[in-house]
Amino acid sequence: MDWNGFIDGYCERLAPGLLGEPVNAVTNLAFFVAAAYGVRLARRHGDRGVLVLAGIAAVIGTGSLLFHTAATRWALLADVIPIAVFIAVAFGLVLRRLLGFSPLVAAVGAALFMAASPAVGALVAPLVGSGSGYVAPLLAMAVIGAGLALRHRPGGGPLLCAAAVFAVSLTLRTLDEPLCSAFPLGTHGGWHVLNAVVLALVMRALGGRGAARGG
Image (cartoon, rainbow, N blue to C red; front, side, top):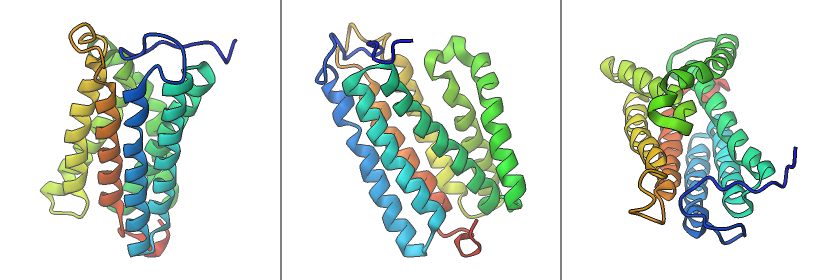
């Protein structure tokens, strides 16, 4: 496989080159804003878990920036792997801190969730296309957030808000190509900005919850 092979995956890009997707590249700054928010939140609560998530958020911004400038196969991995790591770590922390499971159960639950997510994505792929892999995290945030909110438990509100924002974000990602002729800049930049909001809301939901016990 040619790891330097060119990938033209988004409406905005018309040709190879570092400046082929200026909007998609610049909007990755939102991830660094989310990371800075996470660091501030972590320092306020002495929360190592949220600090780890903040670090991953910064890596997500870096990886996505690389992909939307270099637009190669190796850069694609730099884009998607940190996202998967954030989802896995955040889901484990939700199980541990917000639902009260033991560290072992939370770790196993996160692993099983990541393993099952592609199957969920395959079921909805005809509807959401390449964004189908993100449907499982959307459903998880909505279901867990609603359950916590109905019981007036901490973290429910931010998770529900994160699910709502992510639903809009995923819609923008899905519409990037269908709306390309009408909106040449594409809608993928909106995916970046709203996803950064989602990361911040997830960190907000987790901030200080169980930090003292190291979970």
